[in-house]
Length: 128
Image (cartoon, rainbow, N blue to C red; front, side):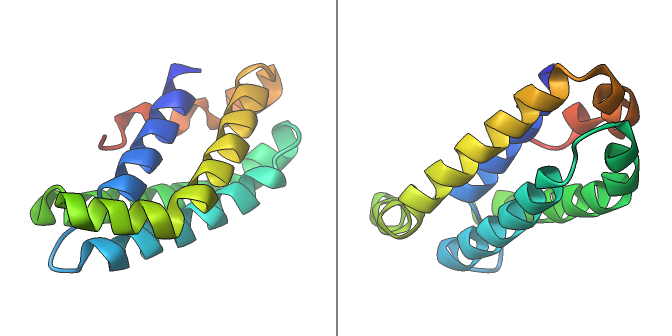
């Protein structure tokens, strides 16, 4: 379960503090897009079999998140004006995605069949 919660916090950090040679705005948009894809995949994970079939896509999305996180690290934290603009533009949508992700993570954490299939993904090793 802690691995799933780590995934959530990584996604939140990427979405709130994006960055690289890109702009904070563009990386936030990319992060939101990746989060939407992640939620969409998690919507379809209902048992061990669907978790197993979703694993390759989840791994791919985690790689995207790792790439975004690396780009964010190069750009650094947004200044106050950028943070306010990003929060105003994406805040509500980000909150909705976070709620969906938390629900999925909790559901999957309490389902032994799903947990067995996804446990080896080492989601807790994702950069945070």
